Image 1 (tube, rainbow, N blue to C red):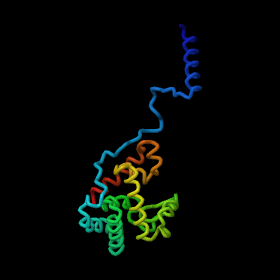
Image 2: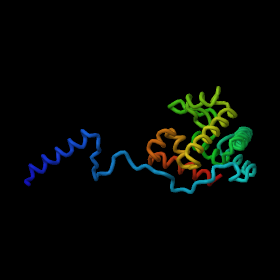
Image 3: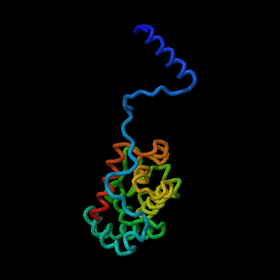
Image 4: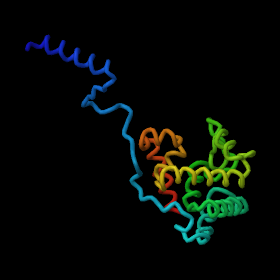
Length: 196
């Protein structure tokens, strides 16, 4: 078989496979990037008891004081502890997420409209019943509740839950993992967690 005949046969085969809905696989790597299942940093236990409960409050408060006044640090830390206990979440993990999202600035606002400590999007805040995303208590409660829902959605897989917080849970679920950009975000939070 000469080269022209081989080319015609190849084109014919491709046409048949694509018309039947089959996929033609190429040995070339996809251009969409690598999808990660987990971060390269150790994942903590997401439950409240993982940090010996209330014993983590002083460390969280001290960490927040690097960013906020003493009175605001106490208020934020108390809310993190209260709602972490209520929703059975690791309070140090919640504090690490908030540190990465807003550096504990209750007035933070992103270009996409995400607001407050946990940088909740307006639609997410509304779905969580938050009337004022800049209110420390409402935002912390909503952030912890939303984070817990992601932990449950991803069967306790902390990396995927954190990536879902950034990319949206449906994107992580659809991809079966998360992008390199999200991997950096996840690892940032897990590294902050280690410093609290």
